[in-house]
Image 1: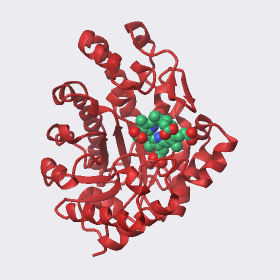
Image 2: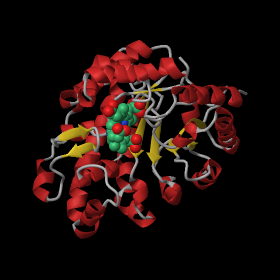
Image 3: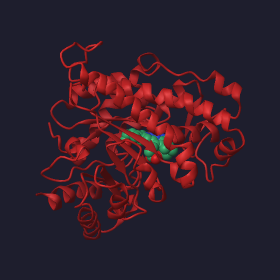
Image 4: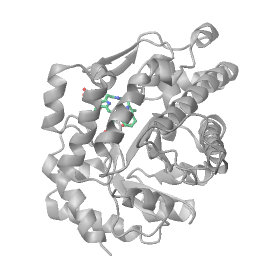
Length: 368
Ligand code: CP3
């Protein structure tokens, strides 16, 4: 198994800097488009054989050091009982956004083994099919980012509905976040039990909050998720000789004494790093709007970092891309651990050969 990614997450020595690409499975790949012509996006997410196939496509095409489960952050929100649609133009849409207590009361905290079993099945297929290649990353949206979609009903410019709920009806917001936090915790726990070897929490929209609001209305819920995952692991880890309550699946992760790395990605994180530092994650994902060495300085030496090439830099000529890759590698020399990535998802228009080139550059230029 190529474990450079897991080692960098833990801050252990690596022979070269590992790399994977956020949204590495997707429309910029012809192989993905071919499958998407036959099925819509939600069907793709819910068909384990197909979801596993598109998860593996970028491993073959790019030579990255980790696979990320193919799914979407809004899948567990649908399982909470909300009607989810993906429109070609508007992206994800919830037809009945959350605006009152009655709709929060109706939300379910799903049992992953029941309503989200297709995700766990996808993971099990991937554990078999990836076995000796690269680790598999599971993921969830972080509570605040999921709440924005549920409250706004889709993507938003200024997140006014979300902030109105926070400021005008904080009890409603707290009740909603409580349900989301439970959902996310159960969902990630189930993914870890099914076999993922690391998890990433996507807080794509947390950067729209002021630092004080981030500290009060987003960070505490992320911490709760991370603490709950850690406490489960210490239970597993302390049962050195006793058999675990449910046997881990073949190829599954739950190996005693090994904790699953947790990555926390925040979009527009620059003004929030002093707070993010205390979230409890092993790795912080950094977007491109800050030099990564400055982020490392704020985060300190007990955390690894991931990032942070601007996704649009993939439209530069190759020699200029290489300058930027070198620059990021130079700036991360003092990090506890570094996983190369983009600062956000790869764009559908991106030339595949440039993504392949970045992976090759990172491996070549960082070789010890
Ligand atoms: O990284 C991967 O390769 C794994 C798969 C993955 C997808 N979405 C597939 C996807 C992951 C990890 C996500 C996370 C996700 N989804 C986030 C957080 C990360 C980020 O990019 O900010 C968010 C905010 C979403 C919600 C979402 N899903 C939006 C806003 C959209 C529409 C925009 C777009 O890119 O089309 C999606 C759709 C989506 N999720 C697609 C894919 C491959 C495109 C669907 C298609 O094939 O038409």
